[in-house]
Length: 162
Image (cartoon, one colour):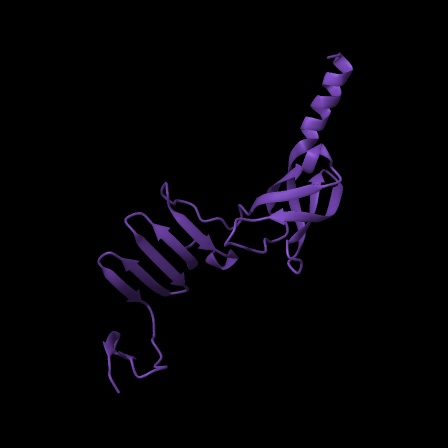
């Protein structure tokens, strides 16, 4: 291989994978489309956004992700792994999973957290539901009666029949 061929291949490889800053998201198509800034000053529209099956989100402008040039062609970019360091919860243990939004504020105020020990914690503001092998625990909640099965009496939950 000549030096010029190696230089061309190396150039294509450098363009094949890169970082990007999100400008906007179009959630209407079957596969989400992004507007990104791939390299300084280079804005690209209609970049396909591949997400994990069973999970979707609409990330905020300014978050970061990875783009791939399909077949080495920068005319066909796909994005993946867009994350937002401004809102990502920190301090999770290895193996834990957390679904969150910007409303979480890093304080654990709005999230679903799959914790170690088969514990699931659902938080929405001051209300928390913790499901664990020991039981289901509700804190900071007011339960409104919507059926004859559950009522709230002075902070305790009682089951009623009728």
